[in-house]
Length: 132
Length: 109
Length: 116
Image 1 (tube, each protein chain N blue to C red):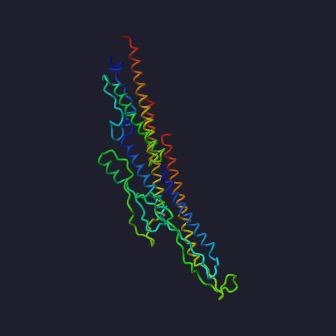
Image 2 (cartoon, chains in turn green, cyan, blue):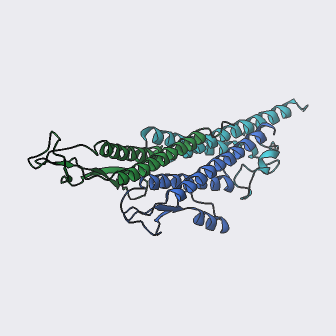
Image 3 (tube, chains in turn brown, blue, cyan):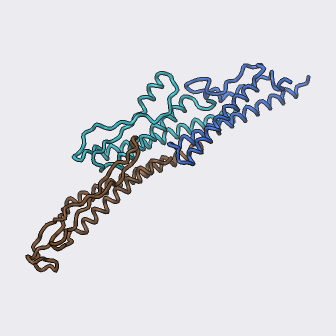
């Protein structure tokens, strides 16, 4: 009966998980790994429409994709994890790109929140029908 | 035994007719012709029938709402309002009938 | 029907159409980042207008849903968040209006009954 809430709720949830992934990427942007392992891989959420065929299903996370584990080789001989040639791996994550994603994810999150509030207002108004 | 209120004219309910709306009459209980034998009985029976079907529609929608099968909450709210107004209408007709009958009975023979 | 006239049926049809538009718009906003997603558009006004012009009692249905063919971005998505927000706001206000109008009709009927 209150499908509008579910649809917006799914949008809120997906955008929240997107923000979480981006925040995690940003937090690990300087996480160093040794060269015999992988660098921290950028995490990207894959959104997919929930399709009942009617355009009223909402959205879901279909899965996650990961960026390259190659990372960037940086010469830091003094780092405890440096290999015999003095190299360590840094994640291949671009801060500018992550910030752009964060802003978009926040915008989407706010928009779905507003959508939820509009649906709630409409349902509440309908429940007042006949009460003068 | 004939209906005790047969032959009594149904007084017009002025407000109701005016609310016929763009589709005009047929949407509201029309006032039977004055003096018609079936005046009140027919009006009341018709109104009760329609009220019955409105009540059962409303109940069906309430069940759908309870099982989560109702698409739009306003469907139930509209059905509830229609049943409520219909109930008031039936009561009004009944009261008018009783009034008219009582008046007739008071007349000196 | 004992109670509802063509105006009230029209308002009911509008409420149902607007509710579906609200859901489809919410779906668009939820999918603003979904690759390949085309925004949904609903139309109940056309059939409603046609039915009224032909003097028929309007059918209470949600209207038709179609996919927007506006140009897509790189990921194949064509949802414009600003447009959707405007549509959603307008839909909400029209829904409230229809409820108010319907409420007025019920109130009018009740007043007539009590003063008759």
